[in-house]
Picture 1 (tube, helix red, strand yellow):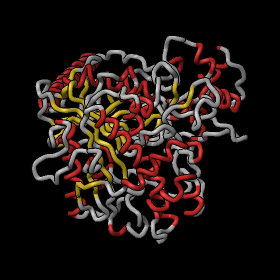
Picture 2 (cartoon, one colour):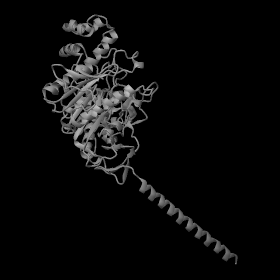
Picture 3 (cartoon, helix red, strand yellow):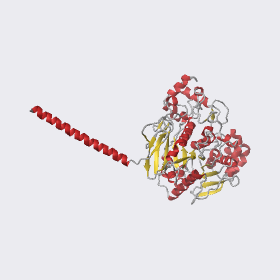
Picture 4 (spheres, one colour):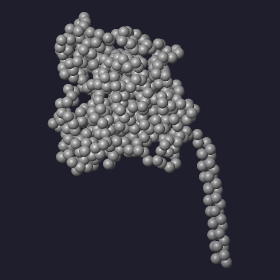
Length: 558
């Protein structure tokens, strides 16, 4: 009897358990069905698989989409490799790591913990309503940072406001520092048919190729792509324009504070010493210096294996660019002869650049101090112009009333960024291409005491993206005038991406550059937007003449 009662209890318990399991299964299935039914996440099928993003209001965002395989292990210092296709949906809602770079600030780690060697990703902002039939213009942002730092995922460069203007915004990561620009004799002999040295540029080209193959699925027009970048990103715009492998991957270009003349991160000879007045040490020699710092000798396969075995943190080395003896250990961009075959200035002067619309400019007071010249007084600076001394003094300080700080700030700005932008515009004009020149000089009233001579390096970027709350050093809410200026600039840039002409209804007219008036768009100190003849002409003229004797005044790079 006891056994029968025990068996009955067991059967009852089993029956209850089955009902509970059935109920849980029903509830879970219902929950999954409801989740799927309510899942409005945007999904796009790329060549490699489906990506699932997130929609914020009118904007759909896709983050951390891989455009190339991780450049690690055997693929360190190799051209970017194809992405392997994936099954199911790739979660494109979370940001990726930045490309490997040093930490920031005092006592910073040798490698920024938010960075990684596995970093070849891009981000896309598109109107939520766009489909594969939309054919919207595409803008591709290339971040700055001296080719040693920076991020393709900075809030300052989010594309929400561009998408509201009917433009798709893409930002990218690319390899930096020695992970992105490195040469060594052992690398040069490995896979001899591959391009060498400029792995960061190879990444940029791979991202542009990915865009050509995939952007239509997001609603973008692969035949209407504008590349634009700031500082090292602006230099990249010049380089991509003259790299044969990048031909046909974009159709308009904008360079913010990107120079244009030789000597500003424009390419170090890969294996020739004293072949360039700006870069007397070859990239391969610099690679050997770096290897020796890590006690890696020789130039054979063993040396290369040891270099590839170093942790990324050791390659980055806290951003150090010289060893304990002062020998250079970081090359920057390289003239390798296969990918980068000439500098932008050489190509421009020979008219070898493609004919396409150009927008180019810089801030009004990019940087001060001993940046280009080691002069400590106005007299020393003007004397460095040699036979042009009197003309330089007349252009920069005719009545002798200006301080040395003001003169050196304007000179640095003109030499590295301003006059090279004008030179570039002139060569595009000679090619029959439309060119628009700009200067950004707005400084908030509260900051004018700290920046009395104009806007510093990068001050324009948040206005172009209309991301004022994310701008550098921002603590107060933007004032109405700033909001209006940001809206104006964002619209100019979007219009240019659409048609190659920044002008549009409700905007102050922006005149084409011409050799007679040398018109430019000037955003003045108080934020007023005016198209007018360039007031910097006399300064630019003497700098242009001085470039013919560059050995006496050396550009040091961004």
